[in-house]
Image (cartoon, rainbow, N blue to C red; front, side, top):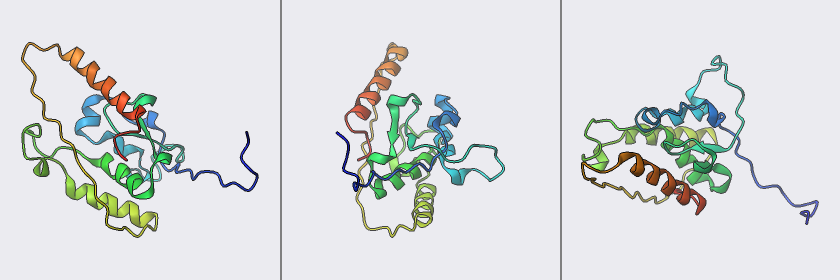
Length: 166
């Protein structure tokens, strides 16, 4: 059934570079904020990338479609936060065991969030977000290949269930 002619289309937030331009290296995605290269603000005008073209954001070390976050499913505060979080990276080598507040570049994330809100003329209101940190320990004899596959499938399932950022 077609929507009535006066129905408004859902807003499109195609303000990202195509996710295929992101370096798919797990190392780059986990430790070098590679996903931030989807943000137009991360490039200069002469970089040669095509104009902004999509609303699918890389939000994990996995770049396959099932792992991407559709920004059209989020309200503005969550959409802005998702984009800002693409610049997240550890600032110390012991990130896996260090206190969480001291482990990441929170100042840069907040600065990026402010810039994105300003660029969209969004007057930020107080929002509450929660972080769930998993700090598992595995036995030395564990099959890391199998563990990695389980992590990937768990992330895919979480995305199918509505995503990790809501």
